View: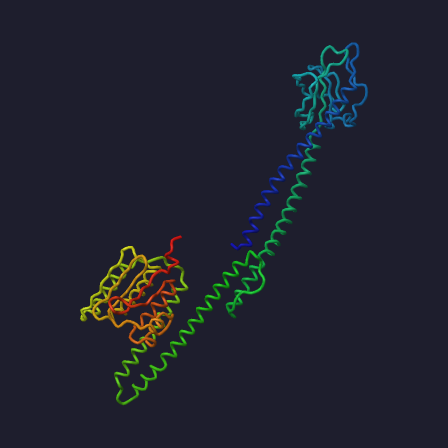
Amino acid sequence: MSLRVRLILAAVLWLALALGVGGVVLGHAFRDAADHGFNERLGAHLRALSAVVEVAEGGAVTVGRPVGEPRFEQAYSGWYWQVSDGTKVLARSRSLWDFALPVVTASQPGAVHVRRESGPRGEVLALVERDLVFPGASTPLHLAVAAERREVEAEIARFDLLLALSAGGLGLGLVAAVALQIGFGLRPLGRLAAELKTLRATGGRLDGPVPAEVAPLVAAVNQVLDHDAALIARARTHMGNLAHGLKTPLAVLEAELAAPNPDRAVMAAQAERLARLVDVHLGRARAEAVASAPAMGEALVAPLAADIAAALGKIHAGRGLGLDLDCDPAARLPGSADDVAEILGNLMDNACKWSKVRVRVIADAHGVTVEDDGPGLSPEQVVAATRRGIRLDEAAPGSGLGLAIVADLADALGLDLEFGRSDLGGLKVRVGPSAARLRPD
């Protein structure tokens, strides 16, 4: 379900609830007002009747003049009055003919009571009655005025119909207005979708003014687009560099293969060069992938170092190499287990290649240190080794290609990489969190 449809449906439900509740409240209010007005009208006729009732000396009751409503004079008109002593009718309107309204004795003489009754034709009447004591009468007289409710009910029905039509029209108008408002409010998102569709074919980034509410989304999308563009550019650069680097060794191999007596040593050297080029670019690609990936937490150093040491021990079994591990079981490095294993593997492999008889690995809360008793690096080679992406097999012969991969991975993970001289006599490399990360909050 689209966002537009959700917003419109929510508005429709809210408007239906609000208009429904408002309509019910207004309908009840009008009914109460109409009933009150109708009863007040009957009360006025009751007071007029009490003003014209006369009691003669013998107790005979007469009504001296018309009460005021012409329909009291029309048979079964729906408007009636009656005077009784509680048991028999003493006077009645011509509209009642020979019908007598039921009499209910008032609990308090003089109090006005309103109730519903059935009329001569079974119609529903609103009846207002009162007991009054007149001069010359031995008992209180019961006065009643009644009228058919059809008139007030028709008025209420007309109001209800008008209210329903008005609420319906208002609701439709409001829904249309809400739909227009939502369409106008979501228009920037529509333009954004159209721009993204265009960018799929042309590339680039999102430009142009946008509302403040959409600006963070546009900024985030532009960041993703810029990141993807940078990744693509770096990938193209890597491919170009790799192709350029492979061109010469492949040409030499092609020439040797075409020669009558190929030089196997030359071919082996070129094959080794090809393998190194591939390793260099794979290492750089992996480092950039790590830099662009989300944080992977931390990995324990001790088990990874033990596994790598076991593998290297088999590889260098014939050299009598001593590989000492001094790793704190709680020592960790930021990054995934694969990243940390890549760093440790390259450092330990490089140390084993160039050591004489001994390699030492120390891991603690400050990082990992790998040392050997080999020739080490000169100060110039240390500067070259710390440059990100430098081809150490070219800039510092004998230092090991894996150090370039370590440098790239350490930079991607935000780790410090330091080169120095070991007390064993060879190279000492320390990799670990930067001082800012180790500093307590």
